[in-house]
Length: 436
Ligand SMILES: O=C(O)Cc1cc(O)ccc1O
Ligand SMILES: [Fe+2]
Image 1 (cartoon, rainbow, N blue to C red):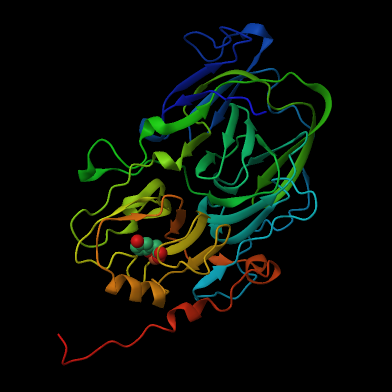
Image 2: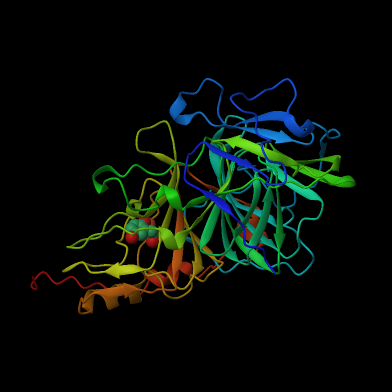
């Protein structure tokens, strides 16, 4: 039976949490007492340069049984289909669609189940993104993972992830997402076959988008983000593996105790989860189709004003009411790359062929839009208030980077749908200069 976990609410807060087994473990009025209570060590995890302005300065103080440094040297290990070499394949500007990715047939844990689909940039220069698929069926046993390269935004599509972190525990189910930022150690337990999508950003951290004229409320509201409460285990005389993703490669170190030995912590550099059902959808109630940025849950900004390294955008259940409007996504070419996944249901622009657990990629300036059937349907249909299905959730990782596709994505996975382009071939010529 799964325990009911407690969380702290908010986005960007200064959180503070103590495991109730050790009351008052947090030092009062300072971070580094000469001796911490209960014989704990103090340790800081910095998620921004020390000197970053306050608005973006993030760090957390841990009070733990042993500091994280108590481990043997990191040794390189097999990185499987995790990849950060972007020049192995020839660039591919086509509209791409993948059938649902396979669930593993052999015992595979979360880290072994990571497969890189696409990416750009370089964790060494801290600029870029990577898109991964995870597919696993086994819990990580006495091993944890931490990523020195960037932050993971994890989108489960099948199966609940039970995630233990240095900050406490989180459970993340399909239609929820979580963000685990660089350097945070975590371990994933699963109850069965599990699959999902991950977007990794090398540049910086995710933020809530500004709301501009929308006002103070709407889209993803800060109070709906949930951060774990402190939880520790005091387990030693064990063989524990710490897996570290560093410069795109995996390394493993050993230690004789659990890394989840944080008794208390405080700070604003934290993992968090969010239930996509809490997204307050804003859209046109008169005419025309808003750009999908109106559905942005989280954004990782670049240094160019308004240009994202990565926007996480969802297409949630909602009412569609615009009048005298072609309501589905318009035909277009975009200066951004659009990677889409489907958590459940169908996507409004393509009811056939884009299945939950699959994906599409429409790269920079690659034309795309509704398939022929969708166009015919929505140009003829009588427009009444219409519910975009309740049980649907598509999402988009939209990036300003040009994405390279990996060999696994194009060849090894055998999921690339060579017939995708056919969905537009039936678009008819309707032009008649005599008919206005
Ligand atoms: O391409 C897509 O399906 C995503 C998308 C949706 C939309 O409503 C408008 C633009 C857009 O890129
Ligand atoms: Fe698009």
